Amino acid sequence: MLRRGVTASALLAAVGLVLLALTFKPVVENDGVGYFVYHHSVVIDHDLDLSDEYAEARAEGVIFYQPLFTQKTAKGLAADYFPVGPALLATPLYIAALAIAPRGQPEFGPPFSIAITVASLLYGLLALALAYLLAAEVAGRRAAGIGVAVVAGATSFAYYLVYEPSYSHTFSAFAVGAFLLAWWRGRDRRSSAGWLGLGLLGGLMALTRFQDGALVAIALLELPRARWRVLLLAPGLVLAFLPQVAVDQALFGTWLPIRPAGQELSLASGHYLEVLFSSYHGLFSWTPATLLAVAGFALLRERRLQLAFAYALIVETAINGAAPDWWGGFSFGMRRFLDLTPFFAIGLAVLAARLAPRAGRLGAGALIAWNLVLVANFTYVIRVDRDPGFGGLLAGQVPALRYLPNLFVQGAVVRDLILWPVVHTGFQPLAGLSLLLAQAGCVALALWVAQSRRLAASLP
Image (cartoon, rainbow, N blue to C red; front, side, top):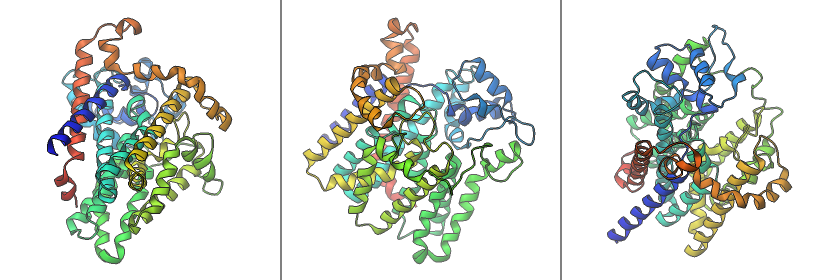
């Protein structure tokens, strides 16, 4: 049995590494500029005047929405409305990259783009590992494996893991997964230190994506049992969020984050049904696997997990539906729900546990295949930020089939080592092999976490 488990893990690692070599694009662009511009400004320039970093992004030809990054704060500084959490989580790898390029140049190119996106890959894979631990607690290991496979391959998660890794979604899924696992494992025996630790993880969620901070309220489900000890969440929550307070004070002179002008939330005129069902990136329309996850929660016997998921889904729907750009901009699916990745894995695992093993595997394969074609549809058929309509969305799946091979030649590793004559980038064995080694390390660490029962049991 042990040998079979080792063989399965080795096979999974090999398959995962090959897929990453073929698909992973270590590029910082779009929202990634806002998330990681802090690194150079603080570590190299020792200030928060971001104007020169934005100018450098333009000079390097980085793709990003420039109107958002030309706004000034009340203090006359260049504004950054993105949270600082992803940059903090990626800082160790950024510091390591400074050993290669001590001047911090190019700011948005290698080795710094590699460091940032590899950090995103690592946290994304760790998010899947934590989701597996959670789902295994509820539905068993086999069903958890199916649930995590579907959530990784049949939702927007894969797209933001390998094609747009400089977004915050992998960091967000990790932070929420860590919080949920800590909450669930300690629900009946949490010490005072455990409550403080849970507060720290809650603050990390808010630090990574502001809207994720609302999920801290899940811990209040323990109020009847924990009583006054719930208050111990507050010190950890505040402590973890202090870096964002410091940044907002320096940039805006405010104690709490603010939204860009014209991007205020409007609860009264929200697009709540559209967020879930629209052909314009609707959660259930683009990602039917998430609807199956909801069905799985209906079958779940754990009342507290049901309530936690219901609360999380309602809150995320309310926040995203109230945003002026409720569809998420140029987005593959409803990406702003990716913080619920651990919940989706649980729901899918519960559903898989009710099915015969063969039926579960076939269903997972069908969902992943559909989503893979949808990625090609989005990238090569839809191509721009527009509502394709349900007819266009479905019809686009047919011409998208011819573009499927393109999805597996995007990876920097395969381009550096094999396809360089075709893409005209030059043979770069050191860069390609170094990135492959970094990817292997990420895969190995995530597998170790997923198989570590001691780690799960030690959480507060």
